[in-house]
Image 1 (cartoon, rainbow, N blue to C red):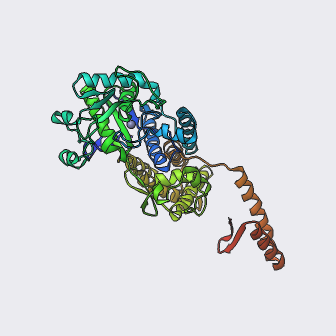
Image 2 (cartoon, rainbow, N blue to C red):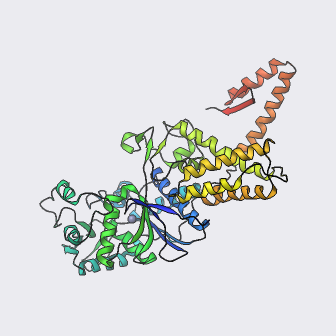
Image 3 (cartoon, protein in one colour):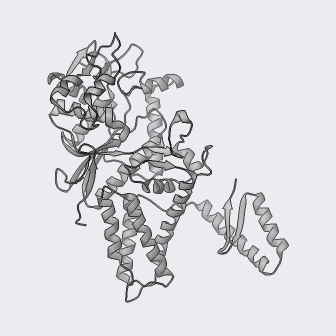
Length: 488
Ligand SMILES: [Zn+2]
């Protein structure tokens, strides 16, 4: 497809034509999870969005190096170096080693992302595996005059940096306001300025995760790991840097400052950010009690959920919103997504058996270009899906004999659906043998019941319905036949 891909760049706040630095190649860095807790749905949404972007680049024929890190050290509770180390706190609570926490939640993260059918990144570096690179980078920033050492810790001098550089270019915040609104440094603070942040933190005696450095034993700050690892694997200047939009004001702003101070270069050409999740229009948060984990969503085991939704329903649901819009969870929306996903999968099955003729009364070319046009417009998955549903209508019309299709058009349609649903959107058939068996059995039972009804043997048909209800199956007779649902 020759059309230009357009990407919304947070840095310029405009939608730009995408041009990779090296033709045919793309370097993409996405901030990974801090593995001190279960993967949450906000993470899932971010990584499904970037997985879809990664898959689309691969589909377009690019050679992509996708780097997504694991933060397994150095992340304190407050983004600006206050509070406990997240791993140390959890480890202390559970009386285990911090690295046991890291291991457990790295495994959980990978498992959830695998359920959601995301591809692994090309490289998944860890902060603890790149301590030397982080020390080296901090030293270079000291040498360039933008960082200073104080009592075994190293801090980035934001005000000095901001004199010659646009520190708030990404966040578009007013620096003077920020300086005035940030609370006063406490008397004992080692920082020179209110916005300064740590590149290296001196370890307290009880701190377990510690490494030697030119400034004594300590551990790296959170922001420096991404600067060190992205430049190590993608170079000082690469194509795309991404993450959740909550990272814009502090983590990504500080990453850019570090890279410029160290390499005199803004690291990424395009900055892509995904939006937040809401539940029944409220922000999803633990303190509001409306946050559920991926596994609770899959099983339905949460007070806000009417039932469980399969990982592919969840993935489909997330793709129905553009990555820059908020995504609202509600039972109604999830149930609609479940039906929509099934309709798409049913249509895919139908294509293979469509009868072909010498003439097409349907226009597949228009359909194809509309799907690509949507994806090329800043990865607009909801529009691309809406266009694919136009394709579903075409498939159903041909199947019903209302329209006709040539063999060539049928193959084109089949390729479009396979490429987009499976390769790019990362959906797959969910083969659940138990539920397939149940479907088969229930259809048999309903057939027997219908025969009984046809013979006016209502005592048998009622008996079947009542007995099924007792064991959790509700059946409904409607215009289009009898349907069943599983009730708890
Ligand atoms: Zn990061």
